[in-house]
Image (cartoon, rainbow, N blue to C red):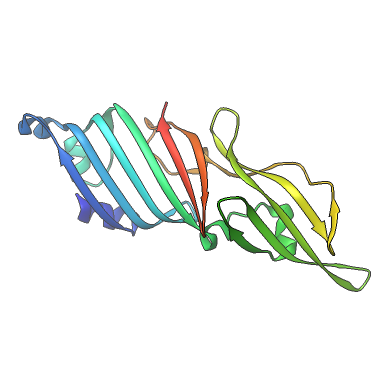
Length: 195
């Protein structure tokens, strides 16, 4: 299964599966499936690591044998995705791209810094804020709380959507909701659950 996931996603995969009694696997049922993908590309967005913990699930074995995931029992899924600052740079909303920002992630904030040209002058710009789940958990939202131009504090721009979960290439039966966004030094960790 790990080899098939490597081919399907282009990422390195680690897979662990448990079923009691073990013959449930022949029918595509399992008690627990743990999958970790490293360096996966989701519709043009690179993600450093994605871990799936899937309990009480099932798939169509015949479809899986030909590389198609057809889910027959959704069970309970939890997903954790880890993004680096490089991964995040590619997801910056269009309004901020003219800044050609450098990104920094700390437990306190995600900070974009760059320059803007105004009347022939290059002015330093910095925008800090948090990444949060949208209402309903269907998107990642950047919520700015500090905006400076040339060292002067200005009103922060409105929040903006960084990424929507509907753009993920997931099997039709899988519907995920973002429950938490954690900022760490150099990384953003996303927690998702099936809904």
